[in-house]
Image: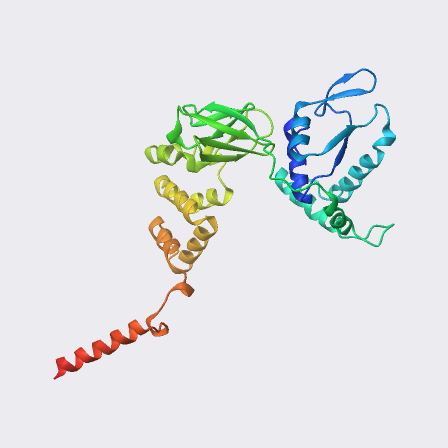
Length: 326
C-alpha cells in the first residue's frame, strides 16, 4: 500500500514487486491512468508517459493498455483487489503507521498464497515458482527516488512537500541533497548520509530526531522539555525522564547519547538492574557503567582459561618463589 497514486508510488510499486518475484513479466497490461498514459492519439492509440518508458526499457518488458470503456478487460483485477482487501482488513483496520499496515498485509498474503487454489492442486506460491523460469532476468533495483536540494534553516530542518525534517545542527546553512521515496526521505551532505526520516503525510508536519540537536541542547538544556523535539520523543524515554531525570536535563541528554550508542533496550535493562540494587540513586554514570560493561558470559576468568603462556608464567613464578625462599 502507498500513500498516493502518483508517478513515484507507481514506479516504487513495480520495483518492489519485481524484486519480490525475482524477475519481471514479459508483458504488463495497464488501465488508462494518468501515470502511464501521457495523452490519447486518435480514437485508440495512446502515448506512454516518460516514467513508464524508462521503467520498461530498464526491465525490458513490453506493455499494452486496456481499451477504454471495456470493464470486462480488467474485471478480474478489480475482484482480486477486493478479495485481498476483505481478507486482510475486514477485522483489523487501525494501525499506528503505514509500515505496520503493510507488515500486516504481507503476513496475510503469506497465508493466502500457501493455500491450495480451488481449481488446482497447487498453491499460488507453487504456481509462481513454476512461472519464474519464464520471467525476464532479475535486475538491480531501479532507482525511483525524487532528488531535491534543500538548504538547512536556522532551526536545523529542511522543508519537503510542506513538511519539515531535522538534520544534525552542525549543518545549519548548508545545502543538502535529499532522496525522496514514497515512505522515507534520505538526506546527504556530499556523499555522506546524515539523516533519514519516515515521510510525513499531510502539510506542516514535523519529523524531529533529538539526536540531531545534541550540541544545541547541551548549550541550552532547559529548552528541552518545552521543545517540539521532546514532544516527538519515544514515550519510553519520556517516562524515564519524568521518573528519574526531572530537572536534570543535561544528564538526560547524556542518556540519549547512550541510547544512540547502546540502544534503548540495553539502557532500560541497566535501569532495571539499578532499581534492584540501589533504587534511590539511579544516575547517568551508573547507567553508562552497566551499559559499557562486558556480558558475564564473554568475560574470561583465569581459572577457566588455559593456555601455554599462562602455564609457563605460573611455572616461572614458582621458580622465582623457590629462589626467594632459598
